[in-house]
Length: 168
Image (cartoon, rainbow, N blue to C red):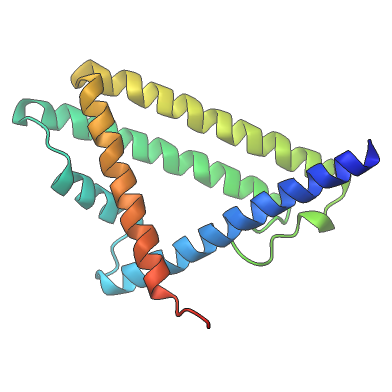
């Protein structure tokens, strides 16, 4: 049982390190984009990408953008709340200083409770967004919207890969 728990801990740590590395690269690239795009935030670039690539009838635009802007605002608040928990626990996420192994058991437990609450809030927000979205647009339009968002994330990821020199 001890070996299994150790392996589970190592696997969780490895997954979190990969996510942290991706988040670090994404943040690094986003900062480069901000510098290149006249200090635009990543949210502004995402909204511009959606506006350029997601077609909505004129009669639906105001309702869609109200729903989407409210979603982005709520999502940012959820992320902020979780960052505050990490800050209080002295857990720095998204860089090479991810220091879970330096925490005591109580802090690790508090972190994971906050982490799963954070994920639950995001899941509920996405469910609510889908319900609000489909009051204005069709479920098939929701699928198209999600494809546009994946396209944005893919573009960002590809640009981030190109932004970092490859070692040989």
